[in-house]
Image (cartoon, rainbow, N blue to C red; front, side, top):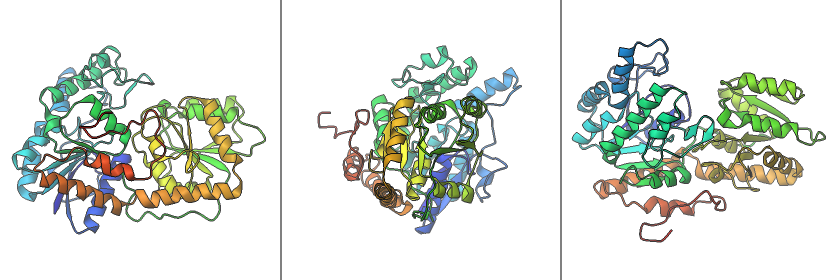
Length: 448
């Protein structure tokens, strides 16, 4: 098969791009041909489809004239350039299947028109909350917010949710209204959600009549699933340093921890909150136990993972399926996570790590204390459990097998995919005990 992968960034940037390139590698390894559609950028990995890529646009650019803002507004909602270039790409490459990733705003759903005109099945992989929230995060000024998920986007404008800007919030709300009004989401044949949590939220929102199925993100081809022989005694956080990630709560938990416990924390990453976090560390006598090492990747990050005792992700927003947890478990590292979003699906409390109440330094402190109270044998067993979970559920080979099961079902039903199939089959996977906020969907003909 020839498969078209679409994503607005064609270079390593975040979790969506990790998935995008992982899927490409897995498809190529299985004998499929992969073609790309993206946005031009000097950082892009070279590929022969780049002449078809859309021009680069940065909606965060400052000093933009009023006429440019209006032009940006039209492009943000429906890009004629993307539509025309997709048509040209299809005529040349003739793909059998299209897989969409991050496309809103820079590429837009205008590309669905040529894809459907040529009868190409479309799978849309949900990486963020853009289907439910014009701000893409379900955050309003640092707090979790679900006001717009039902389809009324006025709260986004009134609260200036998008970068505290009225004009940006208006444009984002306008885009969300347009997509629902034109029923563009119904032109997608199948949605894939990497978490049951997001599958549930997307179904509740009712933005599409098309099936939304669960399929966990895979780790990259070539991932080495192996525990290091020795580990350190410190915690590790790696990722963006911003308020919704809950790092300040983690520092508060360490401040209140038992001083006799020989624990430390390594913070790997950068972001807008770094000065505040470093200041809190200095003002509260944590400089000897907390170190900030900046953004890390590749072998440097792998070394940090091998040397830590545990990875902590104390998020205070709806995480979907963060690669930081998948990567940690592939190294046999237990994880401590908050109880929001898709995180509790990845960690089985007391078996592969611990789950705590989001935003509660006390609850996080107790979870950390539980980890450090484990004896060597108990800790080794937890590490082994994490590694086995990663091997069984996060491999790219396993993902591709399930992916084509969904595609086969889609093609056999002529686009009318059996909506409940994935929701039934995948629940037999060894997930953790159900939590109150993780409501797994049932068959349409069954009562919830």
